[in-house]
Amino acid sequence: MELRHLEYFVAVADTGGFTPAARTLHVVQSGVSATIKALERELGSALFTRSPQAVTLTAAGHALLPRARETLNAARAAKDAVHRTQGTVHGTVTVGTQISVDFVGMPGLLAELRTRHPGVTVRLRTAMEGSAGLAQHLREGRLDVAILSLPGPPPADLDTRLLASAPMVVYVPSSHPLAGEGRASLARLAEFPFIDSPPGFTNRTIADQAFAAAGVHREVTLEVPDVGTIADYIRAGLGIGFLGERLVPDLTGLDTVQVADQELRWRLAVATASARRPGAATTALLDLLGERHPSPS
Image (cartoon, rainbow, N blue to C red; front, side, top):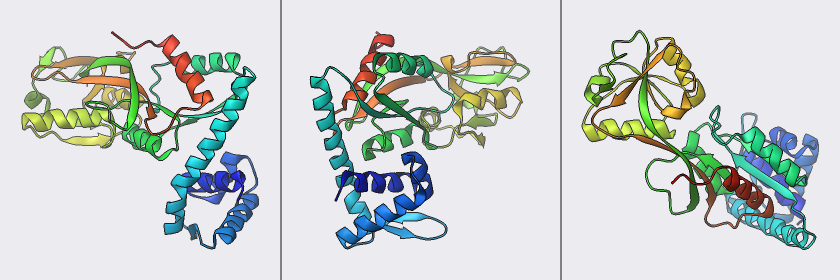
């Protein structure tokens, strides 16, 4: 069994198919298929169930996946140790980030990382399940680090550092009956239809918990998975919505309403999995992020 076999296996498991895995690995699809078949022959067990609709892990594949990740991480750590003796940083860091929400200035951050450590490759990834999906991908080893927002105390299995914090307010169209009121109770807000992210996104979780605690029912009539565009749907008059104050730089056509009976707060953090020691490339990114964005006091 070679490391390449495990790398190809993990790529197929993460992408859900041989063709997308080949794109990720920058190889031909037939090469991925042949490598997986060779691995299955060596192990004496099928690792994937193949159908025209999907490629899914078998029981053997599920058993192998965490061990394959551990082996690849150990091999990466060995390479890091050698590179450190040479005073260089090499490797790949896979970063989870949110769609259309960039508080850390990711392009500039990665440009500086490239200048300091040209041997580092960065892979940016998103999750359709929002921050909950990013956190799960961290746990599974599909990400090395993630920029995410989580409600409540940080999970024990993630190491987190706060990057930014902002109160959550309700954005309404400037022609809305709530415009100009300044403050409103949750019961008053619930009189109007809401635009929100799907379940799993932190702003949705925070809002749902607030209304549940108040014993108030609200109606979400439009779910938008791209947090950065929710304000556009609010401007169009499709509803009102909760967002962190700093998430909407352009208030044209909008007004804000403070929640009168609860304090809702949005927090952005950088996270890694507690169970895995960050590699050299991940550490280099974390160090640079710490320089540019020290934890708020």
